[in-house]
Length: 229
Image (cartoon, rainbow, N blue to C red; front, side):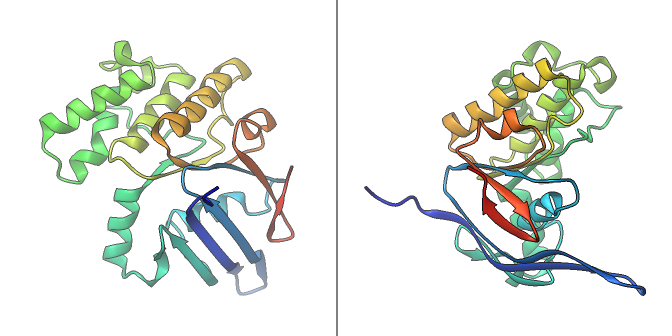
């Protein structure tokens, strides 16, 4: 059997936050490999570095030391302009708080990253409409954020994360603000997107039910990643 191709390869990752009084070592030589198309849940107690890990993988933050390779590319060897372009084109983010723009409709929010990337408006609209249909919200496209339920807002956020066709989806506590039933719909959506789109997916979560829908779970403790199963 052919071994799955490595999509994310992290080696000796360290992240230290320093202040005039002290320093906090969050990640301490963390190693992690994620295969292409794999879905991985990152679990662990609050404060162990789950969000920090996702932010570094997504190039929103830089490590103190160590390497992060995504599709064989040494992410932090890129200059700032190339890093921003890589992040925008290859990575989709979903956070605990949806961060939708309240003055715009669901459709306009999904279109926004494509418009910022200078995509032609008609094409951006068409892609956004297709994605809203994929997450089951075609009938809510014209509604503003305040008219959507919590689960609908989070599904719009997922559609927005996918509009530029990323190969990597990162989600940080995506069901943290949702009730159990609504959270289950989001769980199912992540599983389906991973299965149908082949998206490599990394999810930081306290939700064990969500974690168990992933292909694999890892547990962060003592600044390192350990098998959770």
